[in-house]
Length: 355
Figure (tube, rainbow, N blue to C red):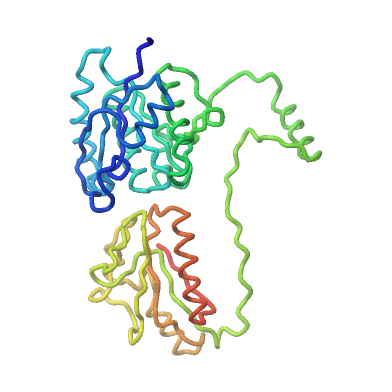
């Protein structure tokens, strides 16, 4: 029987079966053999043996940052100190799907393991995971689905990339299903660029399928709402992704990759004050926002315009979240939920502020 590829598999506390949010502050630990999806991994790829599972809490690895990574590297010293034929040849992390904290942990771990132990490390994430923009240039990230329903296919993509890296085989983003790292590779083409471009043009004219050699970004197109007939009679609302919340952040909105938004009263409030409000945002220096929260959400100016009759009335509540590294899918969810509330309350217009 051929020797199996020995690997370390990294999981968060949930997928390792140790708990949910109640265990999100779990310190890193090594567990023997395969855990959770590691069993499926070994079933799909009999040539692989999971010698240990590294487990970390989502909150712990994100909040502790470099300290948590240093603890993990110390834990991994033992398996990598073994004889050459017993050492792990690869680290696989996840799949993390669209889970922001999990993705950030997997990205930081893969980057550090490659640098420290000089072995390949691969993870898998949904392309909207906030960790993708931070780690895609440094880490091989297989294209995973948005949720656990795509577990099997996501594992297959991640493992295939990992094995090709161990074997030092050539990898290409489209062929091997990983998120492009922005690297360019020279090669000799059978046809000149002019011929290839004309061929694609003719395919497009004839309605035939074709693939561009230069992938273009895709953007959502949102149809603009019709103009307000009379702004002087309209009810206006304030919404912000700049993180302005009542002092103490009562809803515990996260400083990054927010999982919630808050609804806060404006009745009898003419302006925000550092004694009553602050920012929960972790993506900018909060000093000036905390000195004057109106810099992010200009309630003072809006009240002046209201008194001048520039619009009908101000909605008695405002809605706030943090846009820092928040996944697009989650932001869309927030927007839909807030819009339903505003429409139900007769609001015709919104001032949306960011940072």
